[in-house]
Image (cartoon, rainbow, N blue to C red; front, side, top):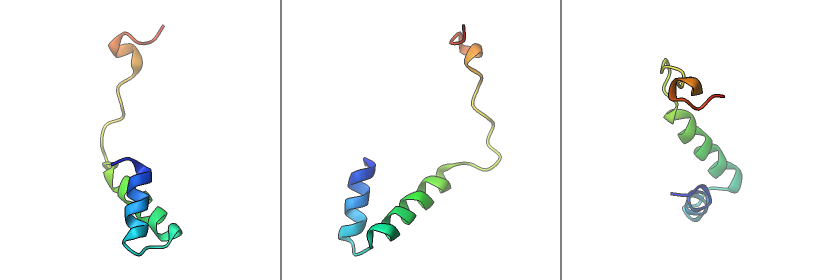
Length: 49
């Protein structure tokens, strides 16, 4: 769901604008895996000059 649709849905569900933004931020933070390896360096895939 695009972020603005998510924001609208949360506000429609009764959250304030600020609370909805906090929920969205928490959801995105939860998607970051703790201890996950760093992204591969671009040169590994022939993308660096």
